[in-house]
View 1 (cartoon, rainbow, N blue to C red):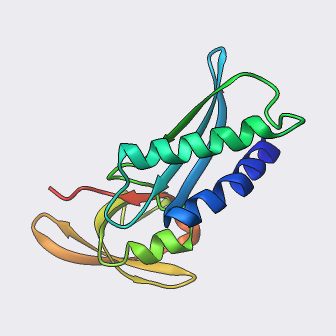
View 2: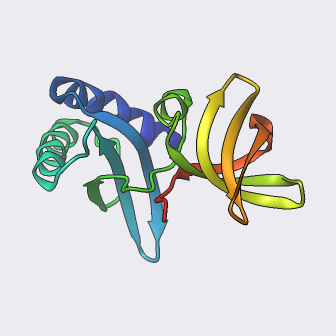
View 3: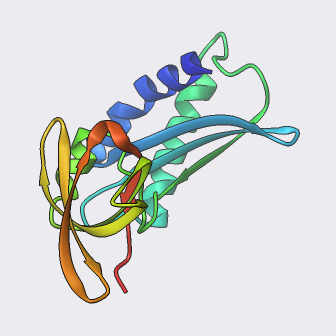
Length: 157
């Protein structure tokens, strides 16, 4: 599976770079009887359906031209936006999320909590500082990055 993802990554990056889009993630997985190749792309201000179609068409053409076929079984190609609550997967995602509202799930509890939502205020290689509300009061928590199970952008209500 990782060879499929790496092949697709090498094929799609020139397409994305030419259009000033970002690759958020690639998934290649079996669901039921079908295989899915999913690409999540974005750009500042968000990606629209026409831009997803442009990438899908260009990538599909490149994949179809390869011999031997890098993906031997039939699959569905899906290119989409990661959505408003996109995951924070790499360092650039975290850098872009500074001062934004995020959701963080932890492996081990801090102050008896394993989930925090708040504004990412500071970021280093080892930890992040999150400003959150607890019963109407503003608090700060420092979270070691090794304790982060999952992080994503969140919608503030």
